[in-house]
Image (cartoon, rainbow, N blue to C red; front, side, top):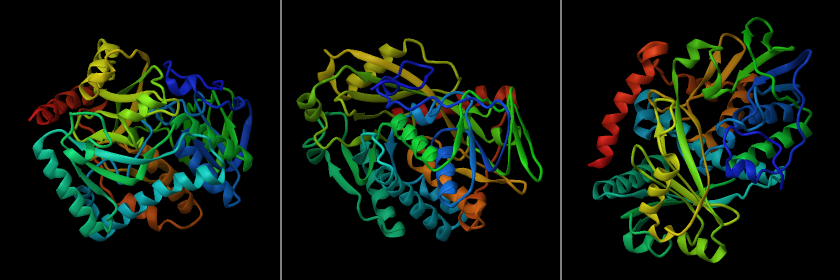
Length: 428
């Protein structure tokens, strides 16, 4: 396989990307029914949903397809959202919180449907688990399982005690798991490239290296680039952490947070399977968490570390290796081939921030680490609203979001200080 994209870091994803013909940059004035900013999962999913309904769509991407979080993330498919369910109950009430949860499950199913329909080669693998490190977290898993079964009709979660989990996962670090057979993981860049290929087959125009420099709202929304512009009766902002000052009122409600992943050398099928026998993805439930899974070519992909200051952590390769060895000390002889990072966009309450600004400018952001499944769902929900069926988007828009405190210059230092409390909580 050859990569047809340029990543900011030499990620394993970029090295193993499925080739896609390079798309042109925008060099004229174009018109469509809908213009979309961002060729990640959110933007491409929106484009696919609209094109399937007969709309003409233009997608503008500042870099290359999947260049942002969609092509760099942990690739884990998880039910729910970045916040806990009780947060949503407090924000929109029990009935609508149940709807939001059910729709998150739809987001998981949607991935499998699109992979099958458009024959996307992205190493899709079923199975995801949340892991408890401390005794108090074991009780948290049990309470979480009971709440999801009793109030959200989600009976599929399996509680694995230490003895059971050791039959599948070769580590002493965890005391219990909550296993979800409906979750899973995939190669996020290849999934995004597959969505782009699907969108192109439906007649969507994708322009790369076409950074939007200004947004002009009105009866037709215009996205202006350095060498052209694209206008639509409707427009969608799907840039998430990379809006770059275009819409300050939206950007004030999210914070870009750096997150990092490493990939080991190839372990071979036998050694890899001995580590995770069912090839599930795993994430612990610390606030600053570790997460990991096996790749299609039998590497260990291990994510951890975050940066709230927008600066990469020092000695990143060494620190990532040390975190990996806490979980799998038996990999002490294994080399780290790749280390990379990117931004996730978090909201203050970690709930999704989706909605409409004015009459015809839509947006989706604030995925808070749950983007693989929720981004695809966001595309569908926004497309429904553009098509005149806004009932679902209206519920998401009821979720109240606050600006991050501190304004443009002080909000990052304020968040760094706030996160110290959560780090202390993880150590308890």
